[in-house]
Length: 301
Image (tube, rainbow, N blue to C red; front, side, top):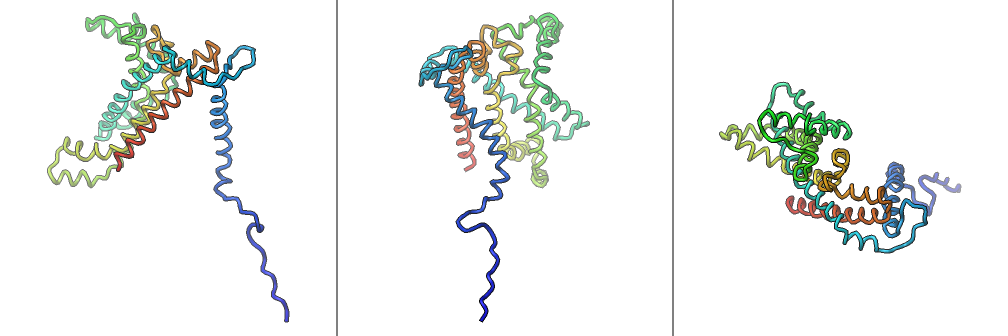
């Protein structure tokens, strides 16, 4: 009696598990993620525990001394207050103005492509161009805004050199520059609202305002919450336009915490101390993000 022929072996050898195909596809991203995010985070954390500087001496381990000094640094808390204030006064108009612009375009204004281009185009400009343009607009003697105030018989304003006005001027610049992104998201959300909701409301006799309050705004609640969270995080990281337009002045009245970190690290040469401030700011942003996420989850439930 002939022995049965052995079946061919397939699959991975015994004792070895095959590598999941998904891991192979994700491996390039994981490598880049580790090299460009995890490693810098770990290196920065270690640097915050040392007295690393741009001078020639080798850094020494100082433990939490940098963090203790930062928590008692009045300049850091002042710059953090400026950051929070900018976030408060910029987030609300950046969401509300974007909503108004999206509603105007969605209602069917003539030449919609022109309006869409006009509202979104500033977002494509680099920060250097935007800052230079608005510095000229804010010029005390030759600027457009003071010229308009002069025509109206009003007193001219020192837009970027008055402590009580400078932060508002930067906020206006930021609004003009970045509102187009939020506008685009809200416009896409408006276009995804089913038409039959409006048709049913019209049959029931609901007017335009009733449809806005009862259909449009509730349908936009979720995307509006997401945009608000993203805008808060973006405003907390403000640096470029402030540095280019006022360099944190006048008298430090517009200096955000990111610029203070830059000044401490690359002007004061204290990289270890700057790293400690960065991680304190990172922890505060992380807490704010967690609170916002919890609030969104509670609202959804």
